[in-house]
Image 1 (cartoon, rainbow, N blue to C red):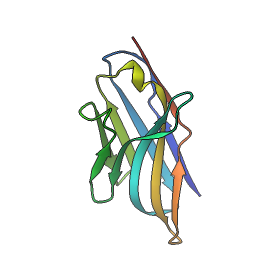
Image 2: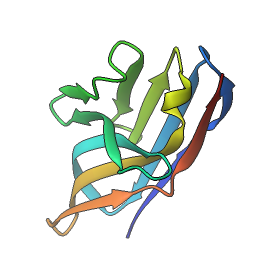
Image 3: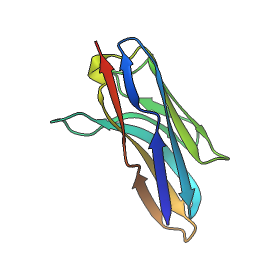
Length: 120
């Protein structure tokens, strides 16, 4: 019905940059919000950044000034530009979308996750 594919993770040195991408496809009528979450071993999944249909954004305090979320509505894609990466950013990053389906149901979906590892 609806599929998410997130990608762009990898191994990077402290201070480096990565850009994560997420492509959504399927029976999407409208996107309420798109965002990125992350989960490190032994820790809860946390919101990293989110962008709403109105263009407003939210960021975790730990990434403000370093990460930027953006979207391409025509392509149903969302991106996370990560700069000045720190070892504490190491986690699996998950794309998330909150949508209205073509049958007018409110649903949300998760990507499979992409590993980001930042070495010191």
